[in-house]
Length: 297
Image (cartoon, rainbow, N blue to C red; front, side, top):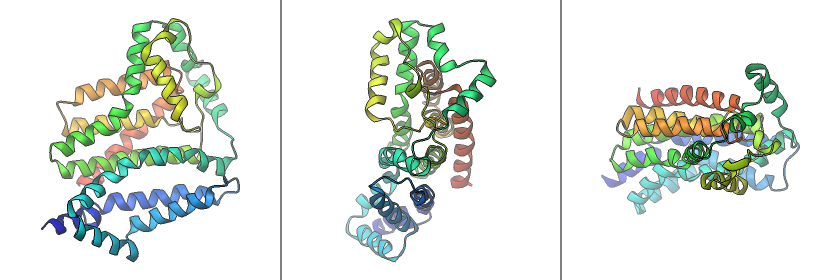
């Protein structure tokens, strides 16, 4: 019985969708390495993408390996099959600059976004909001909300897993990864740096805030260049809001509050253009709803 459950999680109907999704993303994103401006490490990246695609499709060598793992360690292999997509998010994010560099040779589309921003809003909200409202308590609340992104990625799935809602957990992971992948493909083929790379950070008294400083230090240490439009922070937050209202009604108001604060903070803090945020919210909503429908219909 345990072997059957593990097999179902790794390659059966309960888990096959996420593995195929991972394989499809590996192929489509890896196609960037066919462009001429590849980094020196491109053979290693290409090999990793090919392996990921073959494993996700369950070709015979990997199928035999999965069966052996299920037979040898049924519970551990089932846990790994459930969690590996979420554990790979930092790795997939880290490779984005190498992929968009291969396609565009370090060119970005900020001029286009800035022009859209000026046409729609008559200015640059990412530079103007903090200057118009330079209040430390407001700034700290918005920067803290922006940092809640890391909780918003993993919090709802952990809650569903702990509550033993395995079918809901797997549907949520599928919708979440689909949301990530839609955004990440924009980052590869239509890279935008965002205002943080082009304009000075908001200054004045708000720069003394703890959460202000923490947000800027984290981004300086680990942000991927070209990953601004549409905002994956907002897209993922929107997807998690949809998931929470469906299966975590007690947590949903708090997750919604954090998501809204994150979206406002992304612009206030000068991390994203307002168009990034609006596009992220729209894509997050549409993709999450489509992903949930595909996994639960």
